[in-house]
Image (tube, rainbow, N blue to C red; front, side):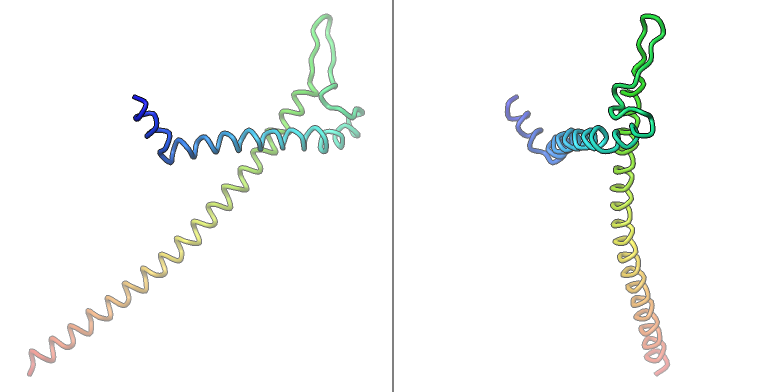
Length: 129
């Protein structure tokens, strides 16, 4: 059982997933810091408060902390935008490689077509003689 677990962990997928989770957690803390320390104060200038997480209103005993929700929405938008940019870059890279492969395949097809045509010509000239 221990060997099976070791084999599972050593497979690429499990290690890639672990690295992705750790990187995601680190990335989330960076984005949270950017929102809290840079973007939040800028928005806070217009909203009338420097710290968005302190924005709230009360109705009776209920307290609605809409500033904290705004922080999370901003975090979500930033993370989503950065993931979008990363995926866009990856797709662009793969499309570039696909175009190169397609061009190589087309040149191979043309070369093979030319070879076939030459073989037909040589067979026809051999058959006539």
